[in-house]
Length: 234
Image 1 (cartoon, rainbow, N blue to C red):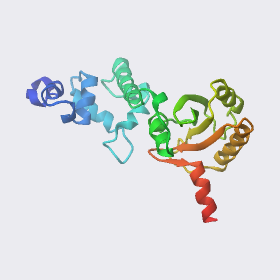
Image 2 (image 1 turned 90 degrees about the horizontal axis):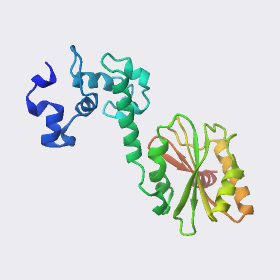
Image 3 (image 1 turned 90 degrees about the vertical axis):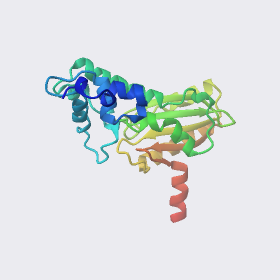
């Protein structure tokens, strides 16, 4: 049965208009983006095919769409270049909408505040991304620096760049943040080593390294807290 042959209240466009977007299933919302089906399948059926590409246990979680490439989407019959690009564009819009409007007004009171600020930005990354949050004396964010991409063992970490930018805007405090693409935020030896390297460098300039936060998949660890816990266990 074609979409236009369904009762109006079951058609995605009309259903959204009548009952609001929250009344639609994931497949119905995706069908609106796809817009047109094929001779063999409705747009809702095509949307369900895309959703079934999710290899995770949680089939209701649509985050896997961010990881699909345009070519992978185009492999589905009925999904051409334009539809694939539209789906990827919607995913990117969702990512950007989840970011704070003005991070410079954010005050950092705990590691959880750092996680809230950067979790959605980093949790889906397949490469390690290193950022530095520069704070004023009241722990209000002044600037967020992109320090390194694909750092791995932090061989690409440019401490001189961090220091020069910190001095340039006279920021008295720094928080280092990076992600673990595996989703497990447990600190590695390299994470602790680079924390100590940066702390030694900033201490010379009377700048405080407040913490080093590691972002996983909806999890985070504070290096500062981790070291304290390990010390108490020892």
